[in-house]
Length: 267
Length: 308
Image (cartoon, rainbow over the protein chains, first blue to last red):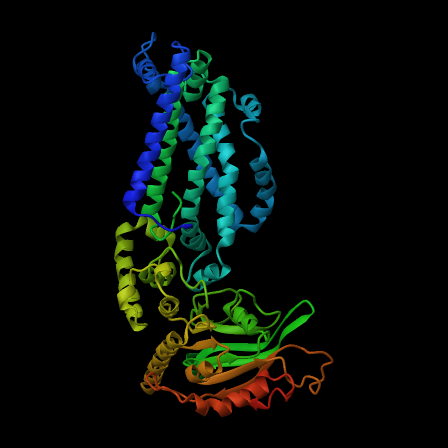
């Protein structure tokens, strides 16, 4: 039946089964491929994957461990970009939602910017910000600012005006209405929006790293893919997925801690 | 001295209030004086401008003409913005979903008596004040019968509980006047009666204060379309209606609604279940003079309270 709940054990068993199926499926495809061509590297066997793991965890000729080097570079860019995007997205969204003239002023550029595919606009960022850290940060920030700002703005428009009027009858100043009523109500929706923005932010970053990076996940994946070292590429993809999942989980945890009133069923 | 006494009894004063939206005339030359301690039931046919009047009093939409005076910081002041002297209880969206019942009630004290700057920089002072605010909020929650639900969030509470919290939230500010906009409209009959009893207990406190020669603490305007509720809770019935004899008053087109009915209502004790059949005469009168489009009488015909 539609949306009838199942027991916890059933749920766990089914989840474990899907993972198991993935592993078995992969092993089988890889095995078949190696029967055709024992030297194949496109679908590496488990042994080849272990070799790959050695490659990116042991120091290379320069004495650097790839995984650590790449993780630091990518995380730094992503962290700086998302942080900047969060700050500006929130401030712009709040001012648009609370101050009518700013709403009229900011609406056109924001809705326009939201429609520009960031990966297609890579060249623009190279021209304006070079190929260093600034470029990555600007690209991620500009990529997520419109979505975040619009989410905050719409969430504010969603607040019934009765709630705002009532705050004034309770002796609130304008700033207090913005902070105590509007901000606190918008916060959980904003965290949801940030969660949804992590995916696109990683896409923008990896795309940029693939084109101009000299270190980082995107750079390594492009390089190793050219050498068809898929035993490095696949684990790297898994790391990226895990990294995104971890961020998402942390944000969800944060949300449940600071907004216990908010009912969030999305996993 | 006289002015002092006058001010002591002051609740609300609407003077020649008219309001219109473009061609649509809503309120016309409306005069209403509410004394401190009165429980005014505002009734009228739908579309007569009850909500417009309420919004005008609240100050979110001041009237096009005339003025509305309330007591603000000990002075009679025109009510052009919502302020802490007027409380409001809406039918819906009454509570802040991100605060528990206790914090919802304490919110007014927090916003009114401390500033963001203070809360941010004087942690220890704020912690102490917050405790005292919460203690006081707890007293008000007890008063509305919710001592057991202090830490519940609004979405965990029933509609009746939410309205109780909303009323406590308004009461704690000790405003000059509290506006209730169809507060029990979405509730079932039993809950409705419980809440009416709660309001009547507040009225009783008013009577006690008056007998001790003190200023009565609660003044209410309750908008309702349930006549029995209006008669039971209010001690004064005010009917707003667009159906009055404006032709006789020299208008070519309907000038808008005004007060056509203003009489005392019977007073009930909280635990006294009224015999609603005995309201029949009053209900008939109200239906005839306030609600009926066919019965056009002079606007001054059914005003008992003197307008000066």
